[in-house]
Length: 475
Image (cartoon, rainbow, N blue to C red; front, side, top):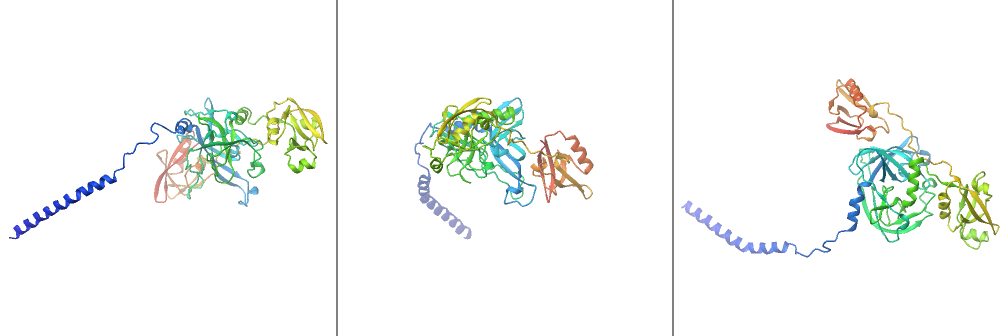
């Protein structure tokens, strides 16, 4: 009886389950239909953003620049002692290849005072860079690396032809940072970020970027609302055809507010050529200090208009001094061109061929006076070269000491050495070098001699309870 009763209960349960399923399935099916997205037609079918094609064509020409920089404690309110250094980064772009030399254009402030400069290409390969030359007056610099590696070279455009309102694309490496554990190595978190905007203005000048030595003398900036942030410095500003029209250089505040500035590529071309050929920029020189005229000066000097520039000082034994220019003169014409603005005057003088004699018309005590000056080369000052780096007294800059019977511990890492640029830490126990076991100081010394010419070294170390690999680039 018990077996029959159990069989009956099982059968009854099966029937009830079938009834429940038959009731719920249509509802579930209905719900499933509601969950399915409606098949709406795609918008803008067949249309692709024109920026995609530009970015694909030019992005690999942009490089990441990082380095270790000297910090002058006398000029900083944050440092009270001596011998401080800081990590920094910026951007640049490849514009020329000559044999194995790859030339990169960037900002002067990205490489000035650098003890070491490292360039990372788009494929993450890294190279130690050297400075061909830098120019603080325009905030431009050229650095170079040497490699057989294939690279993407940019096409330089014509910044004189760009129109306000034209599309502009900025590519760079903003906001690099360090980890809490490793303050030596910057992490490029936003590798070759792309921002898009328009050319907002041209010929921007009279901008103040802080201390006098950090504000370029020659200013003729392109203004753009394509986002430029700290770390974008030195990166390219492209037009819609993928041609470089400017070198991203500055922002108006510490963060982007839609106003950024780029150095026109036409100005950059000549400077870059001079830096490669001479290590400095060849400019004409008058030997005076010009000053902009404001309304108060116009009234005080009884001038009819604000046109012209005021001569604030003349240095003896210079083209200006020899030509008879005097303090208080107002220059209204230079090389037959009317002078209405200070920046235009500076640009005209700088672009004049060395040795050329030019006519200068000045107002002196209300009367016009015609003079002539033979321009000379600007004195060689403010040249940018890497700070001399002492050769490491230890292989890769690693100081080791025997610990226990068979362990070799890292007890010191020399500043600016290859090891300093790696993730190696004091206290690491070296177990292997390039997969060769290291048991004692003798092993380490023999291996270091054998690998002296190697550019890439791999250490296998013990750090606390963990074992890990550390790569070192031996430039």
